[in-house]
Amino acid sequence: MAIEWRFTPDDVARLRFAFSPMWELVTSLRVLRSPARHSLHLPWLRAVRPRLRDLDLSELFALVPVTGYMPDFLTPPPDTPLPDFMAELDRVRNAPPHTAAEEVAWVQSADPEAAARFRDDPVAGVQRVADRLYDYWKVAIEEFWPAIHGVLEGDVMWRSRGLAAGGVRELFEDLHPSVVWHGDRLVTERLNHDYSGDITGDGLVLVPSAFNWRAVSIMYEPYQPMLSYPARGVGNLWAAGAPCTPNALSALIGRSRARVLVALEEPGSTTALARRLDLTPGAVSQHLTVLSDGGLVTRRRLGREVLYRRTAVGDALAHGA
Image (cartoon, rainbow, N blue to C red; front, side, top):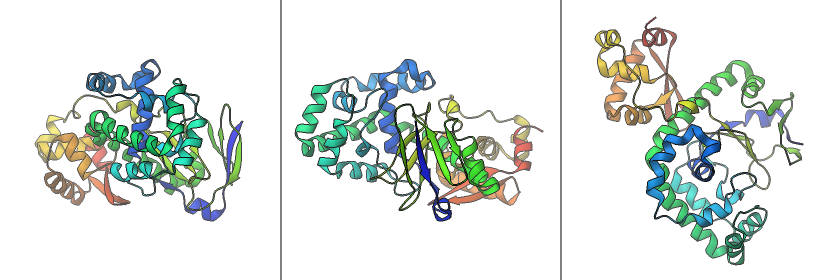
């Protein structure tokens, strides 16, 4: 069984990447429910579990089972490359109640009574769920979003380079073993679902994910086609501390500038680097300007952000070559 999308040349040109804080928030609920399946995220689990003792997540757990279908209205496909969490939450809050009720009816819930209460009054249910998602974001994800965002943007930069160098075939070649490009068709193997259709509207949006790291997830009509896949580098997400900075490199270009260069093991933005290294964005921007003028980093715009990556010379210095 498989999901098959058919592409025209225009559809290929409309391929785009996007991040989704709401997608990470909702899929993290599955990590909470089944830690044994998600040992990669144990450092995050240990940090947030004590904070959740006073937060009632029972209705969210009823709607988001450990495996299988979860309601699509909870994770609308991103409509911009870098959506803001509050903007995505508004989209959830404004979901048509009848659509939400229909989708909840498809869920194989571990708490059928809670799911039934939602369906009986979906107008109130949507608002309750949106309020609880906000509470959960503030407690469990907001603090960690800069680190998660850094992994996601690193993945997008990597794959964008592959797309530019080798086209769509190279992009999908290592996205996930279940995803195969067949010239004008994208086929994703599924255990229990069949679908075949054309890519329409605004095209396919590709969403890297940290919490949904085991498999790909698909959305299609009536929503914009979306494919979420495991982000490259997610295994390093919870690595403690900033990268080690070689003393010789610090002596050559200065300690703070060396820290910035070493931290660019994966592409990053000024804001993400500043948060990771506990520097001000202004200071990071100045260091990046000097590194760029010296040919050690390059820059590329992605939506509203500018992402920096090391050049070959910068790699050689950072690795002590």
